[in-house]
Amino acid sequence: MKLVILEKNSLGTDLDISFYNDFGETVYYENTTADEVAQRVADADIIIANKAPLNATTLNGANNLKLICETATGYNNVDLDFCKAHGIRVTNVVGYSTPIVAQHTFAMALYLLEKLPVYDTYVKNGNYEKCPIFTFFEPFFTELEGKTWGIIGLGNIGRKVAEIAKVFGCRVIYYSASGNNTSTDYERVGFDTLLAQSDILSLHCPLTDRTQNIINAQALAKMKKTAILINVARGPVVDEQALYDALVNGTIAAAGLDVLVKEPIAADNPLGKIKDSTKLLITPHMAWGSHEARERCAKEVYQNIESFLNGKERNIVI
Image (cartoon, rainbow, N blue to C red; front, side):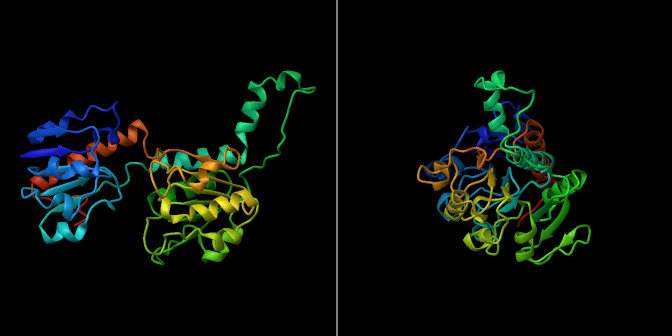
């Protein structure tokens, strides 16, 4: 049995994942480019991957391959049709990052809502020393309590965000892009209502045909000028050029993004031109990546492999 880990560094250099050696010969690669995949998986029985493309081109020579384990919930990098046709099972990991993604959602929202970089700079550049009174609070900021928090994607993460928003005293509304979520725990509204009423709108939906570019110029134009947009879902659910225009023109107040259409960020991404951190906060797809979440993820993958080898289905995609 040969197990090939294509992107060890995507789990972090601080984790000891030598427990995968339990399954037999294990080969660890720190990172793997698209051009390197085919050669590295040629004699693999099991592949552990995250973003490396696993498709007809890269898997055609992997005649021993029985199982692909994604170290993520998403599996857009895997050609499921090819795998199904060749009897290759695919597993993913769910729920491991819910606490930290919800935490990061609020970290971004509060950072933008309270305009924290302005005040940090005000103190550190010496202006507070010269302040004639004990306090300084311009630009003005507002509270979360009493605000309307809108959500697209009321899954595990969306529900956690909703719970926390309620604790802050927010009214919570949500929109189901698929139309399948009929939860009565929170107020379900139509898309236009969500846009018009949300003071903070956070995105937690999967990338599908229905959600790609769901936040486009038309959607942004229907939002409040004071609204804050948070995207911790998938980059392509937001039209980046439209968001750039909306932020520059004051259509909405601010945005916090942990995901982008192209990652790492492309040199020509228009959002890179916005240097004002009170308008735009971008983090490098790290919302999921607390030590605890990555540790849970690695252990979940271990259990997926163990179950597969014991003839049991666990987190099976196909």
